[in-house]
Picture (cartoon, rainbow, N blue to C red):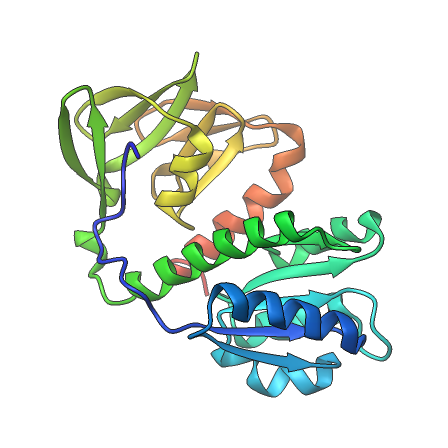
Length: 253
């Protein structure tokens, strides 16, 4: 690993839900989760109406899109009114439905029939993210950071000091308030580590929303004057994430 979050990543109790109107699928997914994580609480629901009363306390939700009555997309919209942190993983037999998942910030989606290898890959990824989310709640924002390893040396960098990162030829350059440092890594891995206050508006850039000065459909200007490219297909998602950041920061009612 080139970096890791400065928190104790010991086991954290998680609550995982499986919501699907087909019992055979609910049972199969539940069994797979319990096989890998026997100590976690796994709950199953046959429809969205059953799920919603418990949604505030859930960490990961496997949610079928096509259900009678309230479908998975509408269920997800209702969940988001109660729980912004839950990781939503959609289950669907038709990939075209997945595009609707962007509106409710889905973590991932799985296409039926669900391949076991892909399922475990997504599950492990979701569990790592959910554990990080829970543990970060106990760490003051000003103390959150990552450790960057470059060559034989390692340094702690506070998240609040990171302005943006860019990747070129497999090398990431991390720009902070005072310096720039290079190391070999994947920008997608760094994106996962830094969390929801950082956004990737272009495949080559990862920016800290805290330092956005202005933006338009083609680029973003940071407070230090740096101009970052905006990919056309990323604009809508960027605006949503930026407005949510402003609300979290108390700058938007």
